[in-house]
Image (cartoon, rainbow, N blue to C red; front, top):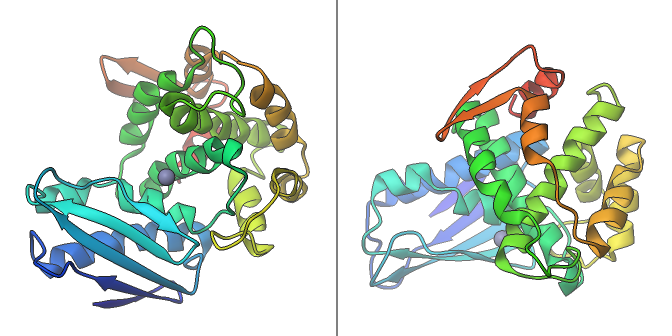
Length: 273
Ligand SMILES: [Zn+2]
């Protein structure tokens, strides 16, 4: 099947045997993720995408892989239900890899963390998640990215937690700092859009310095360079509880409520809007 979204042609190739569900459900799944990306960037980040779906005897939606800014491969297990596709984050996560350059292996945390960070924000902005769901996910997930005893900086320690959630902490902190320093006029969004506009999509291989300088120039700050100087080389334990408090996020056993009198409440609201 073919979809035309945000100026892009997306070809979805179903498995040779059979999809575990109706094609219309699969189409809606791809379409929702592509709409989140299109809304985020003001157009789909690459002109053409091929999505190859394979079936699997077991499980539900398996982890996908994105190749060179033009191909996503993902497996759907036999137990996948339409509700799993409706709640899925993995397709959106993979699509964000289309919109950011390939970096040296030791900076994989920066690519994975960015996809992890932007996926829920972009879905909230099209109404696919509520702000409460976004922040509940961050409050639960981010602590997994803190350095463990013996861990080094993000450029050195490449465990699952540091790569995915440690990378997400980096981008969250960057977003808050950019917004604080620019009176909420600029954000990580401006940095990422500038990198994409300069040709930094998933088909390009960039040195890290180019990512940091292009992003920082777009926000008129040095937040990305400064944060990488701190978190890349050495383990930095971030005061997440203090950050949630400043943003006005209260967590009561997984249920998030908001405090709009908190000092960074407006910043928090802008992130999912
Ligand atoms: Zn990924």
